[in-house]
Length: 515
Image 1 (cartoon, helix red, strand yellow):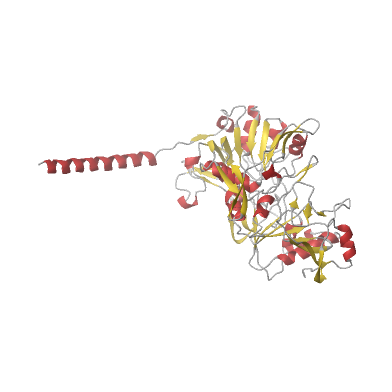
Image 2 (cartoon, helix red, strand yellow):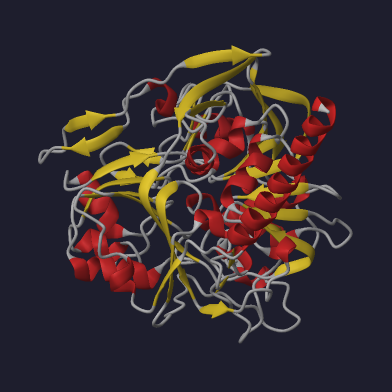
């Protein structure tokens, strides 16, 4: 009958579809779209002049050093490079700067690369300075197909308002500057619009790849490598070893093969460390602070009292990081480092230094029990999301109403903002403590009515700790002097401070942690 014929036709169609799906599943599972190379020069030979490149790493940790060297030998030029920083003068991206192969750098931090700073200030290199977390999220968004997003990072600063020099002229005049960014308010909080980043190529460094192109990274070397590996037309992964399929448990793969187009085994690895640091057995590193520098020690020992049991904290380079060596024994805190560590420990013992385990200051560190490693986009999601209890930072200038400036002196000093703008952007949820010497080396004021240097954050500071005193900060009422160092009078603090302040009715001696 017609009804039976219809049923038979339907049954045959179902059998055909089931067989077709099974065949297609078998075909896809055995397919590999990754090309493997033994020579880094072959892996990058089609990179053309004017290409846009994402280059992974943080400092010298996790950089694709063999691929960078191959680009140097190729002579390709006029490159636009997106990277957190540019290595050092003679290693990493520094060698491409030195050979003048890079036209524009999009980075968060200039750091100790003197050639980077020199070329920028002399108009030989275009530099688009971008907050580190914003850079990570722009890259993550690019890989996820999101064209733009709103972030609180940079609101009220030159990143928002525009005017940051991108290219200088021969007489240090500004030829190209950043443009203002769109601003909106969501739930009473201010945000600015940032556009996603994608590139022609991503050059990343992984620890191992399997023969399908799945990648795993070692310790803190995930950093920018993971999000960058997802945001380019062609991702080229440099690895130390290629292993058989099944070597990695599926749940332990950090970057799946779908993102990877080429894999090359690095010929050699220098594993250079910018700042190798160690501690002696049984040493708690307190001797790393020079006791002759009584001003600095006073700040450090007062800052240590800010740590409360159970806190998750992020510490800036210098005094804040040093203060962690003075945390009382009965206080347990978890230290986050924005290069990809949660649960950072002290300097390693001699012989235990690891180039894949550094802090944000590029110093060798260790990991405490229960610690973990993250990629840069996850780290800054944690920061922007307000999951930290406290951040402690240094400053060039602060204002009486809690503005912070710590990343640039126009025309003279270019540090870059690094992760600082992101860290203070969530000040509604994360306590912001500033540690600094009360005055500059020349005796000029650092605490002012308003900052004269470009802002890192606006109305974001909760407390200021100096060698003379402690101020609490209210974004509407201003400064209140709450603690004063031994031997220092209120009149001395008034003379050393470039703005008015109130004196607490319960003013007390400046606290010092007991070692």
